[in-house]
Image (cartoon, rainbow, N blue to C red; front, side):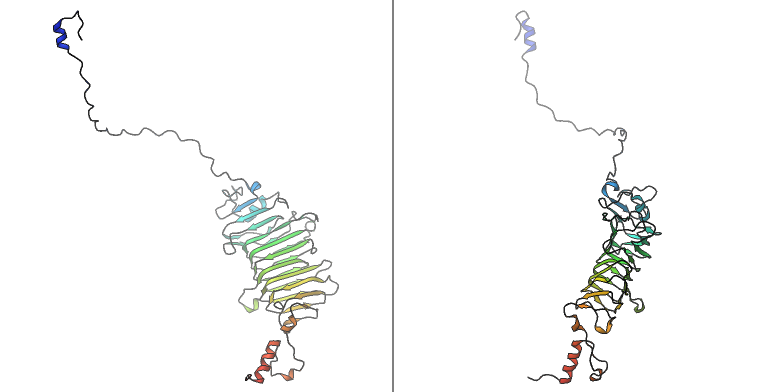
Length: 357
């Protein structure tokens, strides 16, 4: 509308304000510009932060380790079992350690196994220790109230001597228990004990290619096999010696041996009692020297009588006497005479002929 003071010509030229026109189409997007310069790098992350072995009580060893820079953690393992063992200084019955050993063959000098330390491998095929061991270390002490334990699991022991003497002269008489669980042992380990209460050896699910020797002490062997060497002249032997003044106990339960079991229990020694052969098959001879052994044997343990040598009385369980047969008159039999009751019955039946109904 025109103001009254303006001329009519002015009002005619201006006219009314029109409506806004429609929005036009959007144009094409332009090209992206060049990226700007990269900002400065941030601080490094924390990396591997697992607890140290003093907290986890696991010390790692593998072929990627470095003894010079290792702390025994999973991220910084040792290269050698020797260095790992030396790093453990506070093991006790209330703080036992595991040395976890990766695959490979570890060839090292003599190692003194510390009390309350267990060496655990990847498996008997993968972790192979070409290392002699003993327990001549001050961590094994003579305090009767200390429950020291140590040993090996899931690995192979390739080299001797393996001399585990609880009467080691360097330190006070040792006490405790040794464990071997799923271990292949090539040399012949020797276990020597103070008494059956103080010195105990526990062998489970193992293969002992060279047998073992026991001087006193208390040995439990479960579901283990002694043998595996193909040469007849190399058959393994289990040797059990009763020693003065200590007592000796033997528990062979399950499994068996390709070789002989030799027991030396002369007069003047403490009788070997108990001496249990429970479902432990002896393929060779059971040789008992002396009368201070009191073995108890199940029917599936002892060999036939021709291969039991010695005068010690065997407490035969499950009618083990029926396994053996000795003819009172050898002239009644065509050579060779039968050695078992079953063989004698079969030969008698063959002489009689078939039964015709």
